[in-house]
Length: 168
Image 1 (cartoon, rainbow, N blue to C red):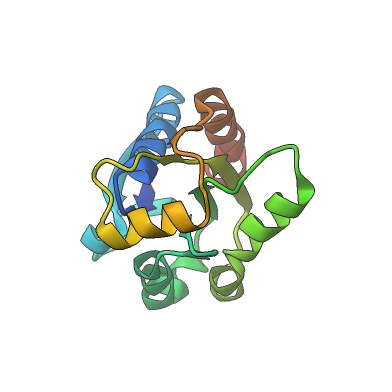
Image 2 (image 1 turned 45 degrees about the vertical axis):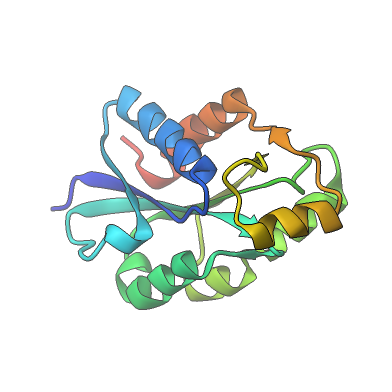
């Protein structure tokens, strides 16, 4: 019987990886065996009894590697509890129209595997380290740079989602 929880993520610049690590830490604090790994490094889901899968929202969508991971593993993922999370600059907890857009970024993966829960978190963007194209996009859309991640919200969601994907 599988006994581990997988926290798998895609990331462009590392911010979503840090959110995934925070989720994994909270699950570990609750006593679970957890692996936090990039989706591109997960080949076998047999050790896992549940999965939390995340991606940044980029141009209104999840990164392709997260979507491909879910497509490739949809049969096994449908047999276990799954939760999704997304991080993005456009997510503002108090603005319903932004939350709807963030939720829409997951429409494709929701059709493949229905999640037990979804976490939406504000992201981080620093122009240092961005590709030329991404720096240009940030300037064109006048995105505010900075770290807007709410760590207490991430931790609270991880604690709450545990009851939905890995009940004792």
